Amino acid sequence: MISNLVVLPIVIPLLAAVIAIFLHRKLPIVRIFTQVVIAINLCVVTFVLFYVNQNGTVVLEAGDWVAPFGIVLVGDLLSLSLVLTTNIVAFACSLYAPKSLDEDKEEFYFYTFFLLLITGVSGAFMTGDLFNLFVFFEVLLMASYGLIILGGERVQLRESIKYVLINLFSSMLFVTTVAFLYSVVGTVNMAQIAERVAEDGQSGILTGIAILLFFVFGTKAALFPLYYWLPKPYIVPNPVISALFGALLTKVGIYSILRVFTTIFPHEESVFQFFIWIAALTLIFGTIGALSTNNIKLIIAYNIIPAIGFMLLGIGVFNATGFSGSVYYLIQDMLIKAALFLLVGAISYLAGTSDLRKIHGFIHHYPLLGWLFFISAFVLAGIPPFSGFIGKLLLIQGAFESGEIVVALIGLGASLLILLSVMKIFIRGFWGEKDDSIVPDHKKARGFIIPIAFLLFFNVLLGVGAEWFYPSIESIGNYLLDPTSYIQTVLKE
Amino acid sequence: MEIIMSILAGVLFTTGVYNLLQKQMLRIIIGTALISHGAHLFILTMGKLKRGAPPILDDTITNYTDPLPQALILTSIVISFGVTSFLLVLAYRASKENGTDNMDKLRGSEND
Image 1 (cartoon, helix red, strand yellow):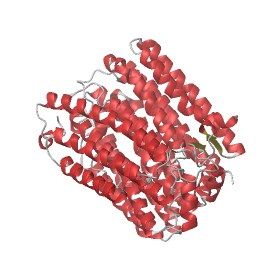
Image 2 (cartoon, chains in turn brown, purple):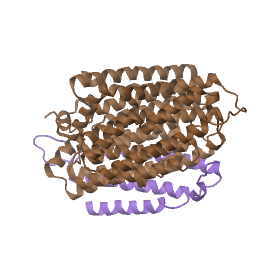
Image 3 (cartoon, rainbow over the protein chains, first blue to last red):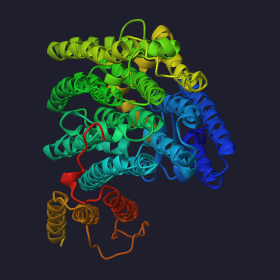
Image 4 (cartoon, rainbow over the protein chains, first blue to last red):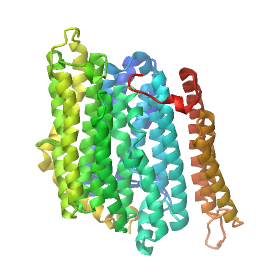
């Protein structure tokens, strides 16, 4: 009975998305409706997470088809905490959207696509079936295609073509990889694949398949040689859509790497050594990208890339500390990336431009916005006591435990440069002479600040209250290090 | 039979990738369609093609077709059909708005 609860975070936004289609012209109703639905979903997920924390993993076998044959949804601590974070981000975005979007864009089924995106992301986090993961990827990608072209401006259409093509290509490779894996191990259930790979040993063909899967997820997560598609398509839509993309989409990719490579393919050491070098290169090139531009939205979009590098570093070092660091960093990065995208969205809306050379003295008009930006820059760079620090501390600690000192140092250097790239916005955009041509719109600014402050509250809470969250994060790390508990829970052995 | 099908899937992938690397938008879309056909054919082949019996599992029956690849391929066909039709509309709109369907001319600078 209780196992049915884990399907609710997928079903609630899905049904709400359908209802939102019919309400699409009645904007006041559909706004409130979406906010209420996400709030209810947030409560449900919190309850399920609390339950799982008390009683252990919940597995739902859809339609009562027993585990290796049917599709399973696995609600463990990792997936549910990510779904919870997704819903926190979604709630902030649902508050921000009416302030930021034009009414005609909102009317054009924004809320439907938005809720479908949440459905897809939650589903991808919770599924225990590799093919089902592909399906949920497609659900969230389809919704993101709808969102990225919302408004249909010239530049949007131009960039979205590339976005759709790269995702379509990697999806097709994903299907091919699943077919390969099916022919080798004869199942698509992740737990059973893991069991069979562990029994027969990870032969050369399985490692080849693993690398192909890494390529697919690496494209979606924007890892080193494959990140070229990311920054521009992420800045062309409305800031609230950029925030959703930046906070959720790439994180689904890195979550899939974390899940697949800790559960199914943990047997080949050289693969993880390869991960570490990819992570180092991702850190370096992402940071260079972030330093290279004066477009404030592009700076934040490039900052997604080194964050992914940090998470991959935690997977690559392959110890419990590294895994908990990755998970912690994943959660806090979802929150901070959403907050930063919403912040630069607010700045560029209020300043009328996203070119840093044309913005100055903003703090005279909007002091609160300025200080929120200051805090979020500190969170992003990992200054104690904020949440970024705890995540990086765990990751660097994990790297030292495995003796990967060079990469740990690269990570630390990248953090400094990340701070520089974000502080550049603060120093040049907020400090400086007062720009008298700007007429401050405080009512609008307040509308922007509430959801941003909501997100930053959780970031500060994660950092200051790390004492409370750490035991759960640590247990997730240990849980990922030993896949047998996952396999046994899903297959009920 | 499986060997022939695998080679066919490989040919579809090759032609698909070749088309994907062209500059004209319509060719690129045809390329993605070919790649998805290759992928679908591949799924079907991986489940072993012909075993000569319906997918019914019973205590007395030992010879049956594996139904799972067929279920997977159906899902995948529907998805790629949807995405391809979306992509066609998107490409049409994009080429109308930008006045060109040459991917070389669809690169962006910051101030666009």
